[in-house]
Image (cartoon, rainbow over all chains, first blue to last red; front, side, top):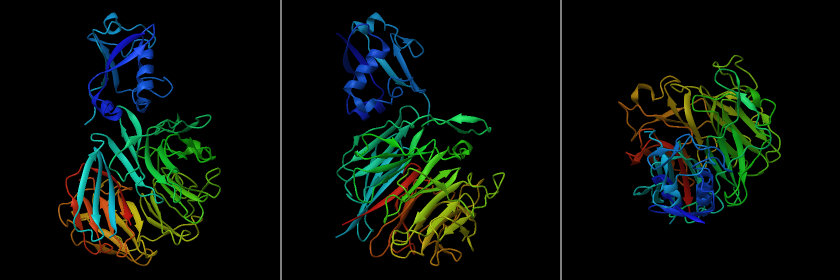
Length: 100
Length: 371
C-alpha cells in the first residue's frame, strides 16, 4: 500500500470535519480513481461532491492538480506522478475559480 | 413558555433565529454552512429537534444535512438522488428534448408523524422520499412518469419541484407544484398522479388553459380544511374548493397579482397572505413599497399591511419558500427578502419588525412553534 497526501478545498474540509491535508492508503497502481475511491471510503460524506456518485465524472467546477500540472483531463486510470506516489507532493483537489 | 425557531436559508448559509412566545427579543445563530446555498430547511412536526437542510454549491453539488438537536449540530446524510428507471426527457428552452438531470433540492417536507420520513422536491423536477432520516432516497417516479412529463419545461429558475403539501388527514394524498408544469395530486402515496390545473389561465404559454405548462409559484393549505387550496401563480392568485379539481381567481383588488409566496393564517382558514411583486419583468414591490396583503375572506378582498415595513425605495423580492406562519395563539407571520431582511409579525400581520436586516439574500423561511 502507498500513502498518498490529498489536499481538499475548504468547503469539503468543513463538510468532512477535517483540517489540513488528509492521507489515504492506496494499492498499486496509484491513480486518480484509486485515490478518490480511498478518500470517499474514508469520508463518505464527500461522495458526490468531487465527482458523480459511483465513480462517475468529475464535477464541472472541480480540478485536480499535482506537481504544478493540471491532471483534470487525464484519464482517471492513468498513474499519478511519482512525486505523489512517494508522498513528496500532495494531490490537490481544487474548487475552480468561479462563483460570486 | 412556548417559543419559536425561525429557520432561514440564504445564498450564503443558514441562520437560526429564536425567540420566546412574545417574539420581541431574538437570538441569531449562524451562519451554518457558510458559503453554501441553503435552499430550504424544515423541522419535523413530529420531533421539532429533527431538522433537515438542503445545502448546495455549484462546485460540489448537493448535500443534505440533518440536525437532531434543534439546529445546534448537524451531520451530512445521503445525497444520492438517482432518477428511477429510464431517465427520459423533458422540453428544453429551445423546445428540444432534454434528459432529466439532477441539479439540487429545492424543498424538504418532513412527515407529519414520522421524523425519519421526509420528501424532497428537486430540480430537474421530481419527488424523492426517504424513510431512514435522509440516509437514502428513492424517487416517487410516478410523477415524472406522468404522460405529460416530456412536455414539461423549465422556468427561468430551472425546472424545479418547489412545493410539497401532504394532507394532514391522509398521508397518501399529496399535492406538488412544478415550475413550469403546474400542480399535481396523488391519492395513493405517490404511485400515480394527475394534473390539477383546470381553471388556470397563463398567457405565457401557447394554450392558455393547457392541462400542463403553467408556472405555479406556490400552493398553501390550512390543515383543518385540506380541501381548500390557495395558489400564487406566476400571475394570478387562485383558489380551489375541491382539492384542486378546479381553480378560480381571487386576485380581487391586489395592486398586482404577480408574486411568489402565499400562506394561510394558523387559526383562520380564510385569512391568507401574499406579497405582490410588480411584474415578471420587475421583481420588486410596486412603487418601492414593501407591502404584505392579507385577505380575511379567502381572497378577492385584500388589505395592505405596511406598519413596520419600508414604504419607500424598497426594491427587494420575496421568494416562494420565504414566508411562514407560526401557530401561537396570536398567529405570527414571517418572511425574508432578497435584500437579507427577515421580518416578523407577532399580531397576524398588523405590525412588523425586522429580526435581522443584513443577511445574504434569503431563499427560504420556515418557523417552528416550540412547546
